[in-house]
Length: 480
Length: 103
Image 1 (cartoon, rainbow over the protein chains, first blue to last red):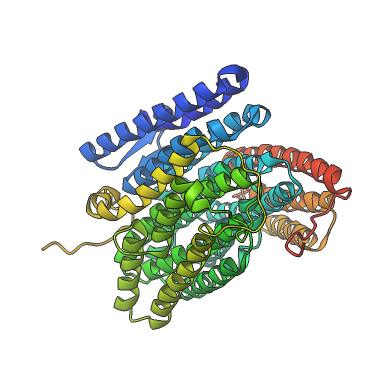
Image 2: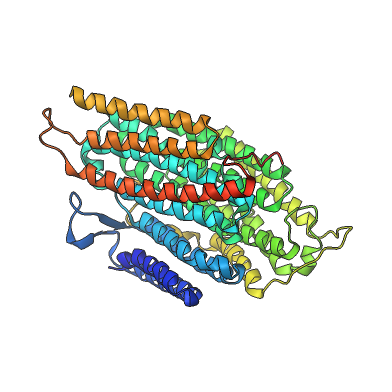
């Protein structure tokens, strides 16, 4: 029953905080604490009895809608609730009265959509939850109410609607061809006929638009950089991975068993590598901090798709690399965006050259940025390192040297843009700047997120065993 | 079968026209209309594909239910987009997406 509450709780929280705006902060924070507890309970239940289905209202699949919980969904739910709680604590101080009126309701709806997505097990539910998430994240992006933010939000809205329509067309074809939208039933019925491949192509285009893989990344930098800091953080950390999660589910249970995924493997690797190089170079030449971080997200999405392509190529370690990269990037990137939010608040601008002795005046924020940078670059012992290490191992196993070189080059470029920012935190600008105070919690939250990104590197083994409950990737193990 | 074929072709046609207009048109209202036309194309295809027998007597009710959900989503998305468009028009005096990268 817990999984139903994971969806209902944020929904009712959102409605309540809209009806009683006086207590919206308390309601919001309370909901997130409860959600975190529920995810914890779900984890215990999962460890106890393994992956399981929940039939909503007691109706089984062809008639009703099933929820499904396994290791992968648990990890994503855990990530969402941890990010949700920390960003809420940050947002409590960040948003002033008028914005906070809207923020909490839409924010809780978005979390409800995310939770529902990670628990879904049918392709039409994925569509509905994608739209929920898309619409609420567009509304949140527009919250800062500047010209950039509105333009970014509009572009984002058009792209997310376009992506959803492509996806829905794919759903229509799959339903027509095989008579169900439930993934388990589909996986039994699906055959390698043109309808299946047309649906695969349409759904992939739609989801790639939303995940912002290289040729489709054009909307991301503006939307992610002009949104309010906590929103930028959740957009980069979880939202773009939600559509990737659907890709994972579709491929691992429907399309990999069909075979002939060679073209997609090459395609994902090609565009992933281009994304790594292009995103990193663009990040390197940016003059504004939030833009730099947003372009770094473009590069990191490239890594995710390189891992995905290697996993499609049948190398099982690439799946672990993929999930690990998702987690470490989420934590590190959100820490970076929150630090950028702090600097924007502190100085009133985020031009990298004009950062004025940040290292001395905001030491906690600078530390957070540096630690997050360590994980993004993939220096040893951090979470990012484990992910990239597995990725390298997978590419070497496959003897794909182009990918190996791209991964290494991407790391080098990442070092460049992280240190470009860190270098300017020590310098003094020629002119004096007015500064505003930053409350302690706004500095501590990014720091703790960055520390978590590093700490991920120390908990690789338990995380992997948790992730593999229910064998979400259908990896065939040879019993010794 | 041929009736179904006509509906499917019209659906795909609407989808393509909408896609073309979405990319080529500059005014935001036209872009929104394009998105809605694309949506209608998908819905038409979805509903027409539910006709499983040749005579059209037996229809599958599930796609209709899904299309209703889709229409609800499309309406709320359009409402949000119109609201955003009005805000953009007030800020920049024209309802178009300007290229901010060059500024």
